[in-house]
Length: 372
Image (cartoon, rainbow, N blue to C red; front, top):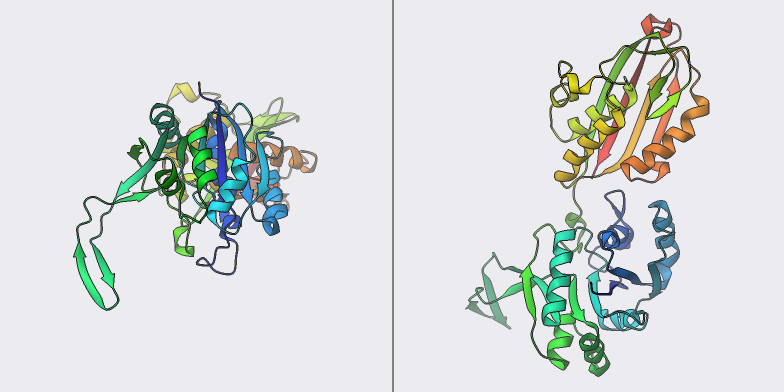
């Protein structure tokens, strides 16, 4: 297994994006830069992720990293970014660990690289010494010289993506030899350490955030559920066991808040509700753990390349008193949904003695989610 280090080039000034630093813009459950880092942390062979970041953005990036529960991953280290991509990568190379034999270089503005793409690049770097993901051009192209326009054949051209992967010595020697700025790492290697380069298929979803329109749109969903109460030994809400002398009348464990959450996610995706996904007449769901059912819904969400950015839960119950359990519910849902705790809102209220809920015979929940 190769010993891999990753350099995340994050020293840019985002001039084409606007006044905001695009790397810190909201994306999925965190921000663009953190999402660009996360896929690499699932690889055991990745021993260090070096984030070469602009010094003015370092503190805010560290806050984002902490909010994503990644601040304790010792593989993630920071170094300074440069005024150009070439100088930024040079700073990253200086922070490689001694055992590193393969280096991946990735744009901090590419938050959607998949694990399969990363794996293919690692394999290509090991077998050929250099590997880059590419896509064919789909639009026709023109070559211009001043006011003159010439038709050009797009067939031999490719769009270059990252991560690009390299045998460490080859990349290090190429950057040591270069004395000017280049637009990407393949250009540096081609100019100074020419040799075999493995091309693998890139991914159209692996876009580089350049302008505001490149960030994907958001979806909102709402869900509601209600269950009656009966004599019992406790209830579950958002996965937390709450001791009390009653339980839910339900097919599964009756966790109304999670049931409403599942319907909210499915609604945002334009899917049918949980009654279609987990039919009440199917005996395999008798007494089912609603957290496990939620995991199935979240897998559907992920297959649509979506993630939860924000979740708001309102529980309506005359009894029991829920205040002592709210913080535990929030912590649990933060980890299940992979969002910062402050992005999970949970409120509990009574029904002012009105109806079945107000008489203590039932509990209901409303949930709203934002998917990105």
